[in-house]
Image (tube, rainbow, N blue to C red; front, side, top):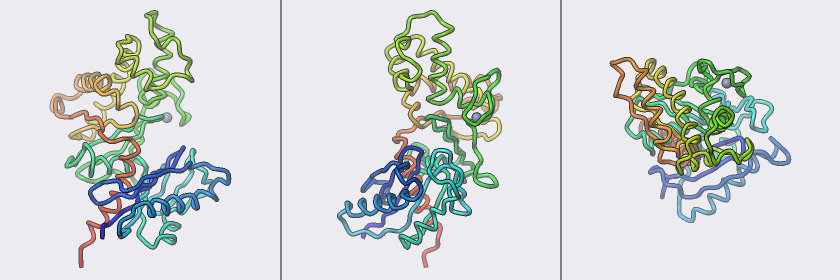
Length: 323
Ligand SMILES: [Zn+2]
């Protein structure tokens, strides 16, 4: 009988659910909107419904061994989701207890960024790497750090808020309320802001001049850069320079073997990694130079988080001695 784990990735827009075996293969995958009419009251019934329909879809004999969850603003010790700006839960939401009661299997919870890191470590590009930093370049900038094979969580699990360290001479207002945060440059929205600033400052022709801020997205900017649009390429270069400078600081503190770039913007590949690597190397202390690899994920964004959530299950089971 095949052993299966359930991986759950709770996001601001949708919640993804997957049945995953110990080799990281998806046997079934689904999703539902995190927000629906009824708010928090209907979230859990929707989650159970989604799990049930996936289990019916599998069509082979299986044993469910555990459930792993990646979620924003979670309290791992309490097993709750607390104060997530983009989710319908107003009060601390005891997701772990609720799922354990409903499923009778063990349930583990971690921050969404940590889940993505665990997915990369067990099934993705960071296999066998014990010291690395994962940056997820999406709407914002997510970050998770593994050192000596262990996640760096901090005193309450909120370590790694790299998106909100300050960039010099940056006055851009951040969603967190501060000004000058790294993610106001290094994220899909940050890249759009950079394009808008360049359109105002530069006179060169660009196909991006035809778009409003609302119409633009990181993928369009990437396509323009690929077609040789000078302004789009400049936007990636500026973004890479800002990121490279900050990565040099992170390398100075943590000395990772690699930095993995994930999220939608990672599709830009060398358009982004080349300036990142160049600027980072130029800022590094001599004994750190030419040692840190900049890698881009080979997993789809949602898959990394789902695989990582399932990894919570496999890692915990593996660490329990077989009696
Ligand atoms: Zn911020």
